[in-house]
Length: 308
Image (cartoon, rainbow, N blue to C red):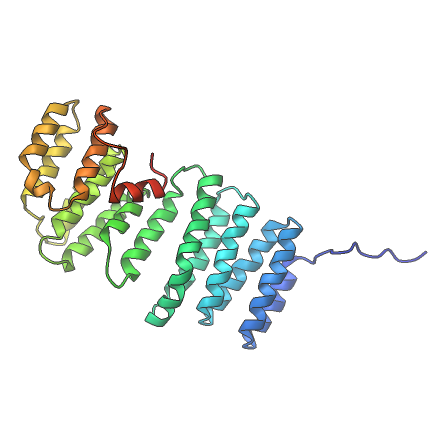
């Protein structure tokens, strides 16, 4: 009786390919290994063996980044997240942990040249990751853990810190304590007049999402961390406005809100986007729509990130 032939297209266990490809990378054939990672993982995707495809891509991204191959590692990281979407993989800790390990592997490579190479992949990577966490996770605006990770990455790695972008991710995260730490760190080195703007922006963005709890927590945590570091809490009319605002938000008092806004109009107008955020706060807490929803600069950001 003849021996039964294996079915056409039968793939070995992913670990066999992972070990083989690691050897190719260790030999210095980075380009050749890259093409093999892409083609072999595609076969597993075609066979709907998504978990094994993810194992191959995760291993490849990490080992390429380990050897300083930023372009290769970034390409595989993008493919990793695309595979999460194609396979309709639920948002769960193991998959997120694999992606996080790939991402954090890069963060230890912090030369300007490497950062420039990575930046061209950051947008497609972020877009695919966002699609995955929204479609197959529990959060419409994306995973809170990913937002915190992105906020910390933008703050620590950007040549010029954009606190609006940092804050936009932190208010969708799940760690106002880390947010407070970043703000306190920023206040140590920012230009005069930027510290109170950063605090006010953070509080207003939380309130624009209807999140009074974390807005209050953030303010208390900032004061606590400044005191423990023997630093002064900024004093300005804008900060006084924010303090009064948090008190008013505890009550159903739209007339008081309007009076407060009028009294501190000059301070509020130091940043035009603050008026947009206040309009959204009025809509969230008092049900009054003053203009088209989320119109303007911050509105574009909020809508892009999935805010209602």
